[in-house]
Length: 252
Image (cartoon, rainbow, N blue to C red; front, side, top):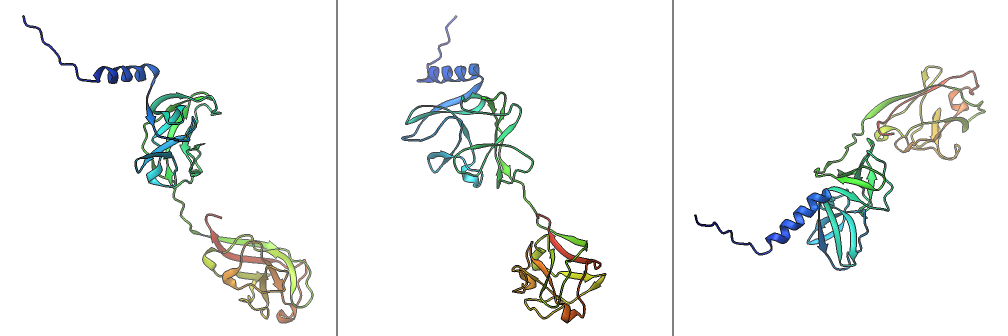
């Protein structure tokens, strides 16, 4: 019976030994060479235009591919692609997921439901405070927030007593109106005429105590309602009730 001879492929044993070592260690990792890389253990890096750079979730070209485990020299680093990694300087929360942030430094941030990065780039889950499991997950587009108008009514507001024109009421608008929209001011349930950048209507909004009237399109949160008693024909007292109706942003 003749023997079957298998030709040894050059370098095959080295590759096999590397794979076996990686599997035994619980992770797949490699040594990379890049002159003066400047990386530190624990950051995520991306491969861009032929160079490894710190990962950044603000660009799809710089999303994280590896986590730096160690930096043996100024020109080499060990990067984990998937599996267990330990970095002594980490202070992780066990069980939490970590994503690449937008600082451009490869920094990893704890994932929360309020995450608003342009791209959601989860790279690992913490096992202990210093050990994590690198995830083979693909990134996705981050949370997209849609700005919609929300009807708002500030009701039954009690004004400070006024005297004549240009009198501060002590009442301010709580939110900036949506898309420079209209505002309806009611005194005891009756709409009054609002000044649009002028001080000669029954009421106007001001950011400087009444000295200057704001254009309706420029009214912002915190602007004060000013009362013209001579124009309206009466002054306000604490017995009066004021409502302000407008739309605000759903993101306010």
